[in-house]
Image (cartoon, rainbow, N blue to C red; front, side):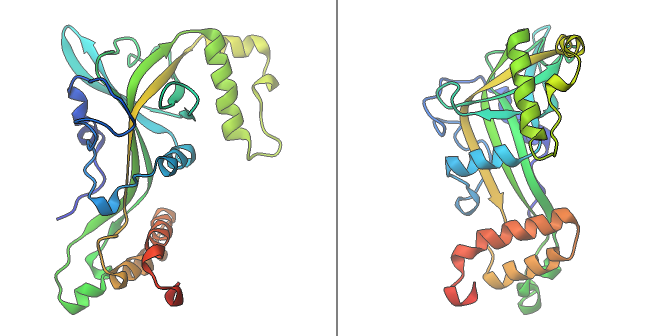
Length: 255
């Protein structure tokens, strides 16, 4: 039977292995930390970069060390992808200064940023195969990108100030007029900056997965699209993702 998207704990379980030198975005023994059959593997780096740029905040998972004990910790953090930083690019963001995640950070274990897209439960009743043979079970469709790397702390007001301006521009740009950091009193912004620290995930590898019924027949795919299409916003978004993923399989006459 299939299962929902990897839980945060399950997805981060591989972190309790010591990081090894990496030589590319997809390399070495850790290359397939995310279970992804070939049909669901994003594979294309540009596609994964686009996914990260348009996704919401990430689950940032790292390991803290206290009294010799490794502990998984996580925060939900808006992150910017900067492909010009480092060999494979970096994700940059900030944490609240009181947040213990950055204070006891283990520097010899990879951190992980999990970016999720829309997800939805898939009922067996959606499949054409149910009516034909009855040999169907429930599953869950979803899209996810995992970004691994070394987490670096930037406790520097200039670095953090520049980051906050960039984050603000990124998320305010669709608004008219957009709010800007300079709209607030300078002394107030300075006091706010003292309450956060910058973080940078220096990327070593990226893995992406789109589980969108690619292993089912087109008739089954169309049944799921129809079943999800009348549901919640998330269900409709998954149906749209499925429609795009199935397009290359369709003949010109059916598209």
